[in-house]
Amino acid sequence: MMRTGREIRVRAYPAGSVSPDDFELVEVPVPRPGPGQVLVRNTWTSVDPGLRLRLRPDAPSGYFAAFPLGRAMDGIMTVGEVVESRAEGFAPGDVVWHAQGWREYAAVDAGAEQLSGLGTLTRLDLDECEPQWYLGPLGGMGLTAYAGLHVVDALRGGETVWVSAAAGAVGSLAVQIARLTGNRVVASAGTDEKVDWLRDSLGAEAFNYRVGNLGASLGGIAPDGIDVYFDSVGGTHLETALSHLRRGGRVALCGSISEYESGSAGPRNLFLAVSKDLTLRGFRGSSNLHLMGQMQRQMAGWLRAGELDYRQTVFTGLESAPHALTEMIAGRTTGKTLVSLD
Image (cartoon, rainbow, N blue to C red; front, side, top):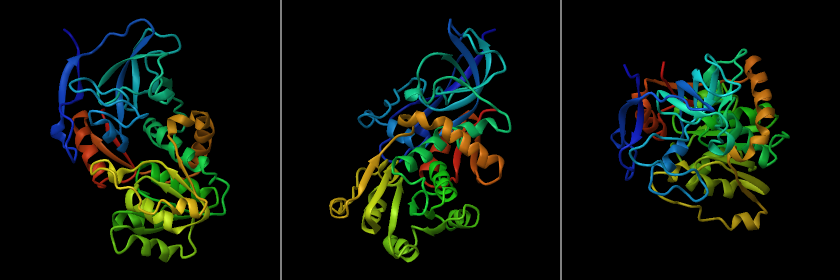
């Protein structure tokens, strides 16, 4: 009897907010691995804000390709267990990561580069580590947070760093990396509960950006200005940062989630980048793979020492992935959003 598994496909590109109705759950035959491939039973799959950029006919130039309609969704980080191998260096029982998520089984080419190298099939070291950590602090999320602070030279300490979307997967790690490397950290999030977590558990000076005036809230905590802004929001947050950055300040442009569903709302005060000698530096985690080993050693040490607070919002069952995405984009998740397939 043929074994089957399930996968999620994009039914239609959303016009406005993402809805679970934009996806379909399909039962398909489990693939047999060909030469140089392994068959992986996926156990954890990732849910990330950047997926929204691929749910449109044309993804932004230079970004990962749009998800095709009616086909499996490649380019989503996933952890799983090898159940059959025809590739040297991989054996049944190995725990691996790859980038063929939002499905229960995947036949993965062992040598094929995925997600610019970030998602290439890799066997994972689970010594004192949970497998899903590789979708968070020990994987792309950790690399993005670490690389963003690295590219604006904010790992040396002694500065004031503002992190927006600070209770999310990347933001919460950026907050802690910045603090653990000796910076003063200001963090913003959209609920009082998240602010309490950022303040009480992560050691940041935090505020709710939905309460009162954004500029006044930031200025109240950092009246002398900020040196670095880690931006995952764009729009009015970036505009506020430009106003509060000190001369020679730097911005790590990680994302612009405020514009993913509503269209562009760029800052109106961009000339301040000229008048203040500011640096605005766009980056992607996958463009900084040379930092992966360094990041993983540092993060693993902090995790083992109990110095890093890693929070997850977990949804259960592959069918819950579209709902998890809508909840995350709406700001109703905290930390890393994951789907457990076991």
